[in-house]
Length: 222
Image (cartoon, rainbow, N blue to C red; front, side):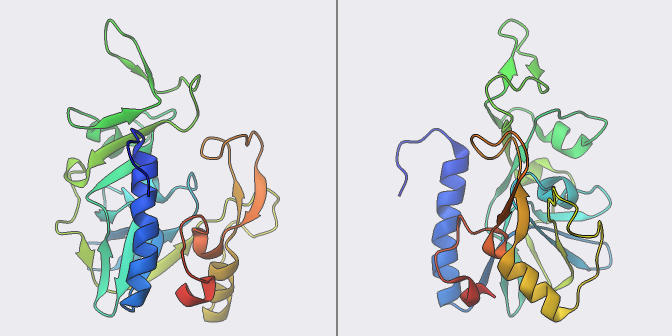
C-alpha cells in the first residue's frame, strides 16, 4: 500500500497490482496492454513493457481509444481499468503525436518535466531530471476516446518486444502456441527512460509483459 505519494506512477501501478490480484479471482484476465477499436468494431490489444509504444500505438486518430495501459478481458469483452492516460512526454511534439500533445492542457498533471518559470513553456526535450517525463490526463482529453471504455473481444493481439539484440524478426505472425509461449516468457529489453540506472538496452524476461505487477503465478494469467 502506497500512502502520501505525489507520483502518479506509483498510485497507478499500485492499483494495477491490486486488480491483478482481484480480477483473476472473478475469472477475468487483467492485462498490461493498450487497446483501441476500429470503426468496424475490430479491437486491437497492444502488450509491452513501459516505453515500447503502447500509448502511442493505441492513441491513433483513425481508431477509437479504449485505453493506453491497463485492461480487463472477460467473457463479454475488454474494458479499461483507468479513467485516463499516463503518457511519456520526452521529445513530445505536435507533429509526431498530435493527440497526446493536445491532451496536455489545464487539468493535465505533468511530472518530471522542465519548464521556463517566466513563460511557463515546457521543454519536452529536456531530460535533466529523468528521461521518464510523464503527462497524466483524463481519457476524454483524447478526442476520439470511446466512452464508456469497453469493447468486444479483440480481433488482433500485438506483442511489442523491444528486442535490443536482433534475436526476433522485425514482424512475426504467431500461432496460438507461439503466442502463449511469448506471453508467458515476455522476452523484451529494459530501456533508458523507464528503468532506474539503465543507460543501454538490457535483455529481460517479463512474464505476461507485466511481471512487476502480477500477483499470482504467471500460468494463472496464461
